[in-house]
Image (cartoon, rainbow, N blue to C red; front, side, top):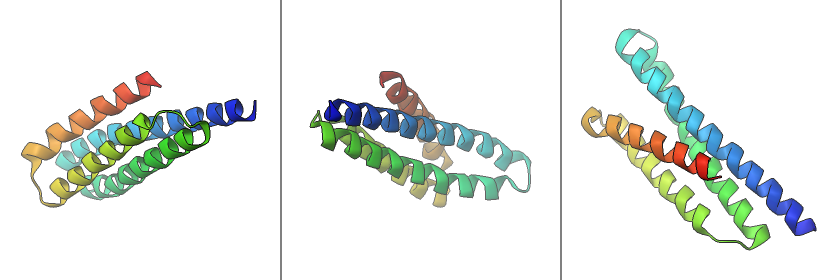
Amino acid sequence: MATQVTAQRGFSFLRIAIAVQTLTIFLQAISAGLLLTSSYGETLHAVGARVMYGASMLYVLAAVLAWKPGGGSPRPVWHASGFLVLASVQVVLGIAHVPSVHLPLGVLMFGLSVLALARR
């Protein structure tokens, strides 16, 4: 009984973490548009990148916490870790000003995050 309650909490925390990650990526798309049209867009996009990266780390933490107590499949941990790698590449590409890869990768990350949210 206690394991089932812990597993349910873990899954809800995992779902919240994925939702937060998805929202932060969506907000990054908005701030990218502001980056092109306003003077404060660069600041918003830079802050948003840090928040998005933190949300990706939260996703990894939530996946580990959902996996360990219930002893289930480690697949969500691998997905979250892979997403953290993509987020790392995204940050590096943004700092290096490589929009030809940065923008499509952002779209891919949003799609993968929505897919992960739909699966939970």
